[in-house]
Image (cartoon, rainbow, N blue to C red; front, side, top):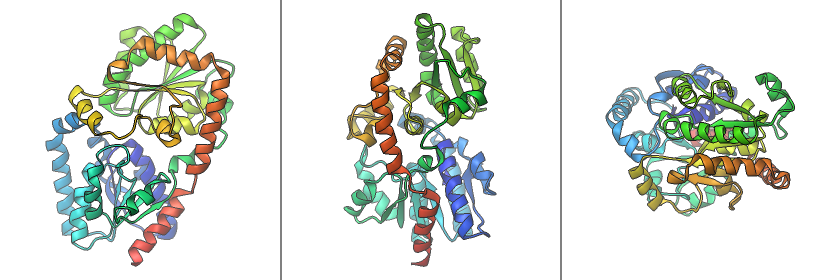
Length: 372
């Protein structure tokens, strides 16, 4: 099993737990993170070594990442597994899956490559590489079937993990936040490249909001590798006494907040499933954006907007990521309770749609693949 970033680590850990119930003697190894390791998974490499966003950024680290992939392939061909599961990270996983499938190893991809959003030409690679796709969005199996690819909607595991009615008060008590405060969550990403591009703008926006509403509380979840970058950005804007940094615990932060300023990615869906209004922002290298923007098929990049098929939450991309614009967009949510009520209902509907008990459904699909 191979997960290439922290969000994949979480998905894979849940799947491993489901598989272990069916196969108590399951032995799983590959590339993973701390949540996978906690299930007994053996990580030959850490998923953090593969975590990168953007085509240009990937090129900069290509030699290192490809070296890991070649070493992995060599190990797998020398001692073929009974099953290979690629978790997201299709650019890394599909070439591995293709080689293994040619050798008769069943291959499963958890998380369908987003051919509905950009780079639709990847369909052929998927068809050549994967025996079955475990889809986390309901419209994906039909789309894959049109191209002769087998897929099962397993639901989004985050929808299983997050309570249908998150307890804001309990989350605030756990984080040491005042129960009656107005709390803004700052989530500038889980990758170094994201934090580098967004953290300063997010903190400058927080500064502007604080000038208008001095009573605001700001909370920023991060993890060990990124904390020095976060601390430096906070010091640069002089917000040390105004931003509470917590290690991990992003779900508690999302449950505790009134509104969130979020980097585009899985965190936007997590925030939606916590029924919290948000503002989405994203920046990548200029050339990466030029390439990606020409290849995308949808008017949005944020998962809440894509899945609900409408502009529910504001998005700020590239040069639009300005502290003043971000601050104003966040404040609009705080000033419009009717809009918040509307979006909470839309997000509740989305939550019910995505909640399918992914570990169980996915394990049943894998059983059929192995038995075929």
